[in-house]
Image (cartoon, helix red, strand yellow):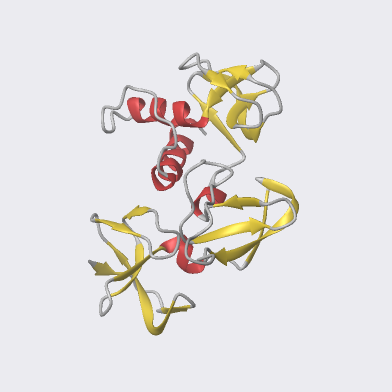
Length: 207
């Protein structure tokens, strides 16, 4: 792994050693949010401890369009008695195992990486208007897979055209455009890291 020329950081999850930003094409599991990572990570070589770059630097309090009612607080999932409470990300619907943002008032939970998703973006299947990432109150049909976008599920939507795409379907379509991984089937609960990386690539393609 090649280190970047950035100052090491101290992190509450690994207080005994400093962490240095590295870049590597090997996969790892982030010790913060417990999801898959690849590429840049903060690393402690003595302990084989890795953090996503964002999980290593994300703020303790966050305002986000994903939950505009209240600010979100960064917390760590802790055991409850002899087991851990089941917790699901309200955006990607994957389980939460470590660091996450939470609104206690609304019981809204979200992975740190999910908060990086952009509020608006463009897609080749709907070039007329930007699509908005939102949780819509009515069920609609996804224009790609023809399946239901259930009420209050997150989707990419153009309200002017009543046009809806599952977030997962849009990203799979983006992967086809880039010929990544050759995935042709519909995927639910796509890994949060892949989701964020693909949105970044989609922005490069269509914005």
